[in-house]
Length: 294
Ligand SMILES: NC(=O)c1ccc[n+]([C@@H]2O[C@H](COP(=O)([O-])OP(=O)(O)OC[C@H]3O[C@@H](n4cnc5c(N)ncnc54)[C@H](O)[C@@H]3O)[C@@H](O)[C@H]2O)c1
Image (cartoon, rainbow, N blue to C red; front, side, top):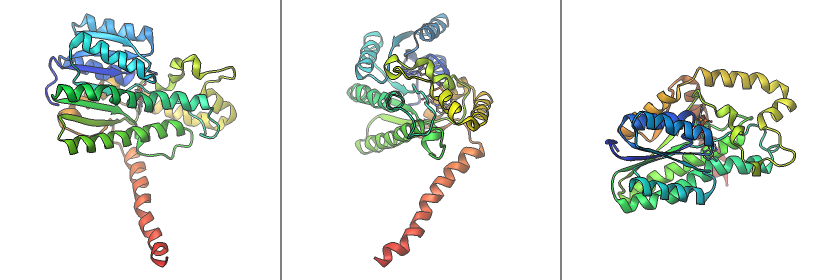
């Protein structure tokens, strides 16, 4: 999609960080904007910001992990603007800790938002887009952690983000095969200066329970040596790309029909990604003699 003016953008996780950055750029492009988020006060504040600048905007309180909430989001979008052209499945949360120690509630919360949120988004909105039969674009927010998987403290997050990358690749192939007018991109940010480290602020009570302790605190209490890595991670976020820049990157990438959208091209992520793929390619050499001998 190259023309955005007067088109309709739906953005989840739009009350903060990257989602807000994407929404701001959408408004600058002259789009009508639908803001969806679970954090009510931040959502209202964001809506006021857009109204004040003259953007046609609605906000819909949405928990993306619930199919019926996404169906409601789609209905409110159609009621307000009649169509939808850009869907950014962006809401996300993180729950650090060794994967075998994370509680089922940790797993269900993060899988619900990061993976099921995207699944509900595509299941609900793609049929609408197909019926419209006009140029549309879907941007799923994964992460650099969806391209590499070795961070021992960030397992559930990374697993969900790999799922989002795979889902997006699958969508792209399916649409390509159908000759569809829907384009797809997967956003894989590196470090963006957002509130992601405070994800637990939006953890619903159903995913807490009587023994609840925020994952980050729990991990640092049990493994005090991880605190220095967390501090370094926070510094990297603070020194990272701004959310508004991330929004700009997304729009420039859409205009240029780029599938894997990266917010940084620094060597650190490139090195990790190359190491992963080199390891997979090396497996051909390692396995060849075994397979030939059988
Ligand atoms: N910040 C980074 O460096 C970085 C790097 C890679 C990927 N990401 C991804 O970017 C996306 C946006 O995160 P961010 O960094 O802007 O963090 P953020 O915390 O600033 O924004 C996330 C937004 O998602 C919302 N949200 C949380 N749970 C929700 C739910 N159940 N339903 C609807 N909305 C919900 C939050 O209220 C918040 O407004 C996430 O998918 C995250 O995983 C971020």
